[in-house]
Image 1 (cartoon, helix red, strand yellow):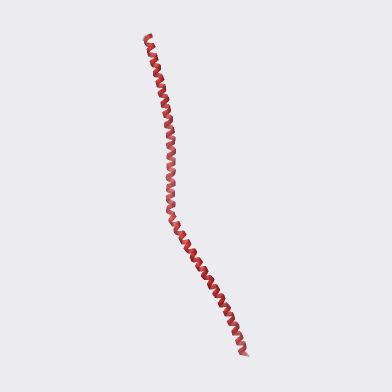
Image 2: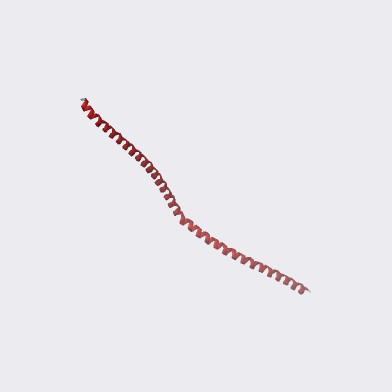
Length: 119
């Protein structure tokens, strides 16, 4: 190769080297973007897995909910029943007190009658 030809080839080679370096820079940027997107994708996948886990837990809780509602209704019914029985018990106690009072009065009257009768 002659000096003249070298003078023509060297600038072309330098231009090619500059072009290759530019392409390498572009590829490095693309690689960086791909790595960042890959990290984001992994984060999204982790969030998706967590979301699926939460959905599963929510579904299980929603299945339990009707049982809980039934139990609450039963508790309310039992509370009403207990209140009715308590009220009824109170009425029976009042009636028993009245009957005891009347019984004592009758016993007193009976004693008085027996005392009068024995004279």
